Length: 267
Image (cartoon, rainbow, N blue to C red):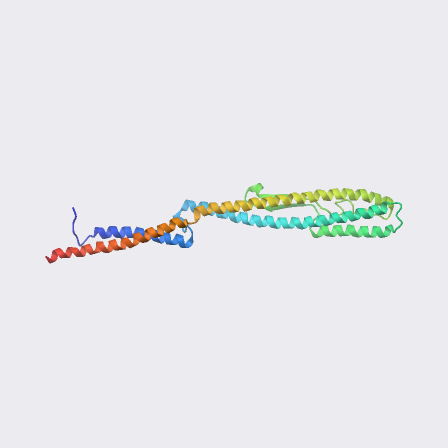
């Protein structure tokens, strides 16, 4: 049975409670639309926030890993270029040694040997400049996957001592013949180092491709958790805007009912 009271306005209380709920929904919809994020505070989705933060951290590691791999690839390319140049220098040594090895050669073997020694010095200089005058371990940290997150391998030295041609001479035909054989061995040894560098270059290229794909997919996974669904939030904005306006109107109507009770007192 309906009652009339000027002390308790139940209708206004209900309208106020519903209006509060509608206003909170409206503010949340506005916040999500203005920020573009579904999770703006921990209370929006505590479990989802933890997962999204994990994805974001993984992206940071992978992004830096791609930069690390790019830097490593650049270093290897510099060394690869030097190895190609050293290969050309070995070809020149072979030419000089072969020329001097011929008994029929009538020129100056001293001149040939002078150039031969100069080329040996240039090989040592270039090997030193690019850090290939000593064997080394090369590694690049790409991702946080333990041993599988590191790309690495050994790179041999290509100085004349390592290539076993540092003592060669071509000032006599006999020595030149020995030099030709030694240079052939050096070319083979150089090829081994070039293969080591090439393998690492290829591995880093593939690692970069994989990491970039992981970054895209991890970002998409984070987006599905953290980002707001704009279509859904636009609908919520309209919904709560209407509820907010109708709630205000209902509250005004409920408040006017208490005034109507006074008509009974005037009678």
